[in-house]
Every structure is written in C-alpha cells, then in structure tokens.
Image (tube, rainbow, N blue to C red):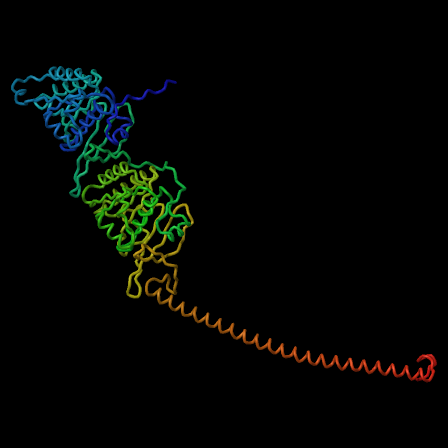
Length: 569
C-alpha cells in the first residue's frame, strides 16, 4: 500500500487560520480571498506575506491595483508591519499598478502579458515564494467582454501555478456568487470567504473556508478580529470531550465552603457556576476564589462585563477582599468591557486571545447573562460551549456568575448552560420578618459527595462568613428569625443547665446526710460492741473464777476429778 502524500501547505502565520486549514494555504497554488468591502481581505493578504517573509523565510510580492505602496505601508504600520524595512531587506516587493479603465475601453486592448512580465520580474528579483494580487476586480475593471475576461482569468491563475508561487488573489463579493465574475472560485484551489456583518448595531467579522482542493478543512464560520497584532481567528467550534479530568482540588477561598465540597474545594479544570438574584453575593464569592488562587501564586484572568476593575476592587474591599496587591504583582488581570461593545463571537475571540496571552489558571466571567439580548440565547450557549471546551482542554478552572431574574426557577440559567457546568452554587435571597438574608446551597458538584445543606452566609468586613445550619419549624432560619430562635434555644439550654445543677446539689446533700447518719450509726455500734465485748469478758472471767473455786473445793475434800465418781462436787 502506498502511503498517502499530504498536500504541501504554506503556513500563513495568522493565529487560528493555520489550524482551520490544517497547516496553511496550498503551496504553489492560488487561493481566492473574497468578501465585501472592509472585511479585511487586503490585511489578511498582507499579513500572509509579512509572516512568510519574517517567520518562514519566504519572500513575497504584493501587487496592488487600488492602493499605492506608501498607502499600504501606512495602513499596516499600526499592526506593527514595517513594510519599508522588509522592502529594504529584499524580503518584500510592493508594486502598485495603475489601471485606467477609460483607456482600455478606448483602445479596446487588454493583455496580461505586461502584468506577467512585471510580476515575473518582481518575483525573480527577490526569489519570491508568495504573491498577492489585490484586487482582481480592479485588474479586470476595464474589460467589458465577459468571454475575454473569463479567458484572461483562467490564464492568470494558470500562470501563477506555473510559476509555483503560493498566491492570494483578493476579490469583491458578487450578487448571488462569491465573486463578481463568478469564475474565480472555480479556478482557485482554495477559497476563503470573509464576512463583515452588522446585527443589533454590532459588527462581527467571520471567516469561512469555502473549498480546499486535496485537503480537509474546517467548514464552519469562524469569528476573527483585527487588532494591534494583526488577524486572530478563533479556530474552535467545540473541542469535544477528549480533555482529561484532573483530580487536583483548588480551594474556594472559604474554608467552610471547602468543607461542604467534600473537604477540599473544587476540581481543577472544572467549570463552576454561581447563580442568584441581584445582591446575593456572586461577585464576592468570585473575589474570594480569585484571592485564594493568587495567594497560591496562580494567575487569574477576570472578565468583567458590568463593573470597572476599580469598582469591583472597591466593592470587594468593603468585605475584606483586597485584590489590588495581586493586580500589582501581575497575578490578577482584569478585562472589563460592556457586552454591547462587540458581538458574541468577537467577545469570544477576544477572551480566547487574552487567555492565550496571559496563561491563567483561573478564568472568571462576571456575569454570563450580560451577553443575552433579544433571542440570542442559542448563540450565547454556543459561544459558552466553545469557551468551556477551550478552558477544560487547557486545564483552566472556569468560574462564572449568572444573574437570575426574580421569580424564575433557581435551577435555570438564561444561557441554558447548566448541563455543561460541573459545580453549581445557587445563592438565595430569603425574605422573612421584614428583612432579606443570604443563603446558598450546592445544587450539584460532579465527582464528589458534597453537602446538601442550605447555609446562611453573611458578608462581613472579613469576607464571607458561613453560619451553622439552623432549622426551625418552617425551614432554615436566617437573620432576626435565626437570632430569635438562637436566643430562645440559649435560654432553654441555660434553664436545663440550672435544673441539672440543682439536681446535682440535692444529690450531694442527700449523700452527705446519709453518710453522716451512717457515721453516727457506726459510732453507736462501736460503743455497743465495746460494751458487749466487755460484758462477755467479765462473764468469761467469772466463769473461770468459778471453775477455779470448784477445783480448790474439790482438792480440799480430796475428791477425785469431777465426773469420775458420777457425783456432784
């Protein structure tokens, strides 16, 4: 059996794109990058050349038909691309070709021979391995005959293949087709479509590999962002269930909560959800978890979507959680933004990139449901599924908060991600006796025998304080009802103690009286015993004396021993 030969590919160096394409663009073949205006075609093509020249030792030629070299250099300078330096080093050629449509229409002549000569010279001058033509519509803008245009297009793609360069041709998207001419996508070996859509006043860029001859590739739409580092594509849709489960435990930062979690806290790399209504202490629990992780020397990335970092640290400081030192040490980093700043996918891409850069052990998102607007619950769930899979694959513990609307079911989240969560803490606001008190219970925690108690907790100046379980006739007591019940129980306990002490004193008194009586009887008995013994002794002495007198009497009468003659003395 002949082993399969993989298709040679040229890595783009663009974050995420090489993973989607399985290694990059087809080497020595043309790739079409199409899309509407402003979706990032030129930038993607330029980054492909810059990364090739700087990382993979593959010089490149950028032939532009719309922007001059100076304009291109200025446009990409903000991304850190120094085109002038690369050109000076012989790693890049940027050639601007001006095409006047009216001149072509007037003369009726159009030939690619001049372009091939010019492009071939540029390729040979630096030994280019990569070529970009931006954009194909401008190149053929003055060619009115569709038959000639299609023939020239085929000729162009064939010429690039014969030169053996890895090429990108950018093209504008047409009505009902990927390109205006509807041919480029068929003659290209690889087609990448970029999309820039606006929904609910929020714009989102997406990328899709439409086709890739001779290679498998990701077929979904992938969000991507353009920032100061260039293009970053989020390659994951769902990483599946192939991640390993850690047996290491991490503390929640609250010892009594750890005790409820089988005595050791959460599993590392697991997903933790804390849900509850407003003001129940979700962010405070997140703050404890973050402080405990930083105390262990672990990095924590805190995504905040409702409060600024300063506001979060101020508020947590009021309950004894000081996060500022950890920020100063670089162990804690905040990423704060309003959910409406960008679309879901952009948020996901941004978080993905921030996680890769900061390499945290703990990621906190506060809160999840900030992303939900209108009917995008399914999209939010898909986004969180991607994020959860990514965190678990990286053995990063995820801590999420979720704001529950008043009156909604406690075991329900707006994003419907409860089934994806490993440990779920439900915070409760209990109203009784004209007051609101906080309590929580562990709804689930996979892989451990966790407590099933509902515990009241207080937000004190020293942090979260868990109270002992106090159950009254109507259930768990909190607040003043708990204090009242505690006072009643304390009074009853004190009364029982007094009763016990009184009984003990009575017993002691009875014991002392009885012992005194026994002592008196013993004394009386001793006296009587002594008298009786003395009387007995006297009787014995008298008896002995009588015997002696009888013997003396018998001896004086010369009688024999008593009893020998059978008579009396």
